[in-house]
Amino acid sequence: MHPKALLQACAELVAQVLTLEHPADAVVSRYFREHRNLGPRERATLAETAYAVLRKKNLLEHLARSGSGPRERRLAILGFAQALDEQARSSSGQAQARGARDFLISALNDNERQWLAQCDAVPPGELLEPHRHNLPAWLVAPLRQQLGEADFWALAEAMHRTAPLDLRVNLLKAKREDVRAQLGDAAIKSELTPYSPWGLRVQGKPALARLPLFTSGAVEVQDEGSQLLALLLDAKRGEMVADFCAGAGGKTLAIGASMRNTGRLYAFDVSARRLDNLKPRLARSGLSNVHPVAIAHERDERIKRLAGKMDRVLVDAPCSGMGTLRRNPDLKWRQNPQAVAELVAKQQAILHSAARLLKPGGRLIYATCSLLPEENEGVAQAFSLAQPDFQPLDAAAELTRLKVPQAEQLVSGTEPARCLRLWPHQHGTDGFFAALWQRKG
Image (cartoon, one colour):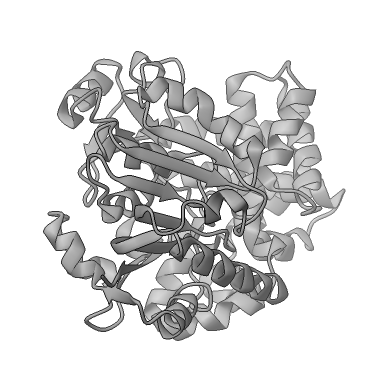
């Protein structure tokens, strides 16, 4: 595609994602369906430009005011340049990024080239705080309060980068070192994830969908933090287990494999469409112990019939998703305090309903991919006060028993009820929280 045509397409897509009416990934997917002539590189450029604008929206809107021409074109130019800067931070991508920068420059007129050079020259130290952290005002205070000043800025900087690509090895079908060797044979570099015993972190963004490792079910794409949640559940062979908010089933598949394809694993969700997305993944996985069940709500009759029968229950609750901003930067602009308050009420209702499934001695985990204390510690503390039959467990002790390295660095709170707390800038994972309980006998 000609540089000017590609930049115009970027401007169109930027305008669409900035309406913030729908999730950015859905908007990007729809744009690609409507423009099937786009090649892989063009699609990558379009997506990376749109996401760069969402990640640094405060900064780029500030810089765009000094330019001329349509707003969406100015933002697309800045987003394109930001995406290239991100690519250049990777040593393997420097030469490619320089060539792509020349490609961008060739699409600009003389005034735009001069303006972009002026934007590039703005010293970061002269920017106002909102233009440096690129977060909505309502999110800044709770993060600062939790982290302190230095860690707050480290987190903000981490959220400007793209998330790594993590894979979970399906140990029913392959060993981690063997998979790593096969990836190497396909010219895909990877390293062992530092915490999860199932994970590999892949360099770059290779096409995986057609690899035999992927089509055979030997690997699944899954963030290391999600893998640790499944590991913490510690589901055993032959047990009755429920993934209460299964979604597309990434954690369900990990739990099923840890059960060695025995017992019975229910994948509950209120969205039949999301559970449908589990079916092809389930077929690849080789698991036969997973039973997807679409429910109307957390008080569904099918839930009531299973009360007191489960050995393990995972509640990966619907949340604001603030821990996934590297992947979903639009969420910080689409969420607000009122929506979070509504989510907290829903989370509490779901957790209390799911707890009824546990038999005496059973394990309950409440988890989110949020960074906000009201969705995490607040919900967990309220549950503990309301449910004296559930004894809080120490996440560090459980992780240590499961031989997870550096377990003490993965938790927050005080003994004996410390919780899993993962941060992108500290652990390289998405932001995750998990609290654990055991039902008293």
